[in-house]
Image 1 (cartoon, rainbow, N blue to C red):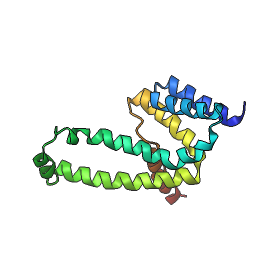
Image 2 (cartoon, rainbow, N blue to C red):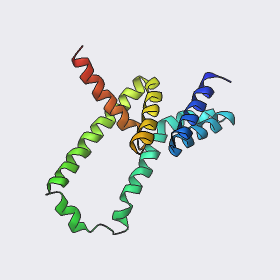
Image 3 (cartoon, rainbow, N blue to C red):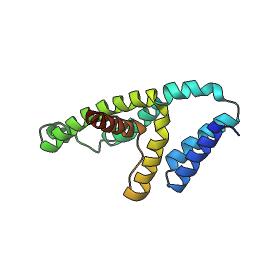
Image 4 (spheres, one colour):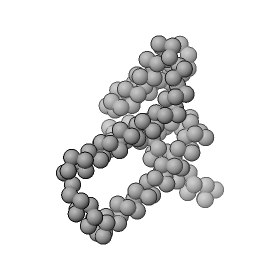
Length: 151
């Protein structure tokens, strides 16, 4: 058994212990790909998996709009309220942090395990929902920039 298999098994175990079905399922799927000699799909999963995941995340968020549960009038008026403006600013900041998180994870992929462990801690102790390593990476990148200011 090689180190990559052990790492995926560790992530699978952490996902199960941390009650994070998404993390456990992702590790299990990657182990299945590994054990069935379908590693040729790893580059495609790495290249397009993020886009596919984001696609489904955005679809799930847009369903209330598509189902007509949110009137257009309410959407338009929300742009001129304090919570609406905060939501716009938060969306802009989040996408910027996601970009920084992606850059950080591409340059230092070994940090992903720390993000997974942190996500599991957030799930089990804080009642969080693991929606994205990019945001976690973005926050980590921001915190690292702050730490570097004081060095």
